[in-house]
Amino acid sequence: MDYLMGVLAKRFSDLRFDEFVTFMTIVFLCLLLVVYAITTLIKQIRKVEHKTPQPANKSLKTVGALRDYQGFTD
Image 1 (cartoon, rainbow, N blue to C red):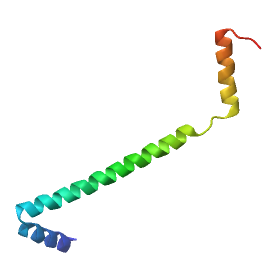
Image 2: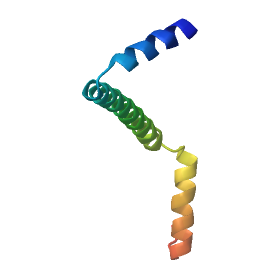
Image 3: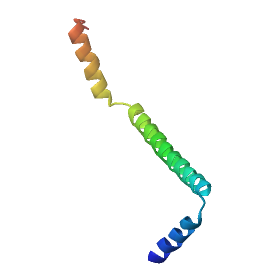
């Protein structure tokens, strides 16, 4: 690990400023793409969880409670 850090430090010390900025821009854009992909995936998962149907008993109880509240009778 120390060898790898030494090689990277040597390589970065040889970079000119514009090369460094270009490299860091590419790294930033890659990280931004990864964050965007993860957030999109989380949104899709939540959307699928939200669309799962509720059990029939629960929805019927809700309709019955709404009817009772509004004063409707069968």
